Length: 611
Image 1: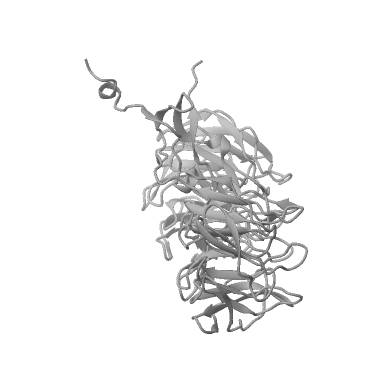
Image 2: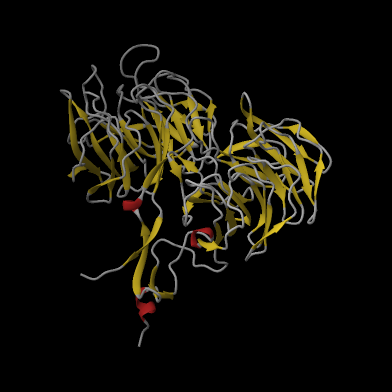
């Protein structure tokens, strides 16, 4: 008899735990034995099973030091100078502490050899609320507060003296971090009044801005390396947070929270698989200790997995959790603008033109925006597409050398724009989907302001061909797909109304399909190649009021409302590649903005139920 797997092509695994996205995603916090002295804003270094917590404040500064052996805290030799808001580097048997606050900022540095503390060379700049990384003979003192304000300066310790070296990019107080003098990371902190999410990595010679924390916060705990770290706790007005995030070398991901929300805490750990947290503050100083442990063996989550969880006695499937998808603040563009063109993915995108800089262009590499070569002919409101940020097309538009719609077309090769075959008809506010060498341009305005069109054109990489027109005249709509399979959602139409109808392109004709829930124009889509799975967001009625924050997901047959943008806008740029990962940037809110937001839908294990 044939096996089920031979017929169906797969087997259903039996697993004791659900698959997870990473080792850290499978980790959790557990309560451990309390410190002997409740305190906060001290400093702790070491690993989960061997750490040293030094000084801090209860009602006053204390000089207490406690050693953790993986089970219990033991009082050991006191530091020479009691203080708070200091930093440190090293291990439980070889530690360096520096800076802090007594009744004023201090530059005092002390070294621990496992049994005694010794005063060594002072910091060059007295400061408090700084970050420290490294070892007791090779450490970095980073940023902090040195009145009259926050500093970006960094000092390097070589075992005998401190030397001023390269500044961080963002001056701040109360950040934290981990690593060594040649490979370090800092994250979070405050640039009063707000907390910041900024993350920077150090390669031994320069600091580079990388992906932000998902939750901006200062006075947080954390440790690890420049490629594997955890951030936890911290202050998010008006209280402490329990939020924990994992850094994998490129981005931050939410993992299991602390048991007790707190701030002004300290952490220690070799990497994101194992961390120790102690002390902190809620409405009083804390002695609470928690340990984060991630499994060494785990099942990696993969979309489409079918399995039986033997612990919960349930059948499950791993799917993209669109209902749980969220928007998070991302790195701002360099120049505020709206009504520009955009193309690419969530990690490789381009933003073309826009008001008030109609020729300027920026590219996105997944962590930062860079100004690049401009358009040859400045204009705004052109049609644009490209499924990767290094190959795009920008067609038509308005403005430039004379008023009215334009027929100019330019292609982007990753470094510059090249003039190519003009459109057969000048048009502005049109829509495009597909690639830079095979795409459909449709709709837009060919005449006076407010006029619309249903004209559709096919681009083959060298020339334009007229194809079947849409059923509804429109401009400023939202789109996704490839040249043979696409969809146009919503858009404005003459005489100044906003429509919610949607049309689908099958390579030869347009067909009306399910309407969007919220009629709008000037919105943006995730520019997905998969026309049967994409999102639209933002926009406005044709009279531009009120601005929309709505996000809707198209699954190939229906539209579903999902999480709103945190900031409503219209005429933004957007990039995606899929419905699970997208970026929106710039736009009008209420004037041209530099705002950027990232959309993420993670994989989730969903129980299969019968009906």
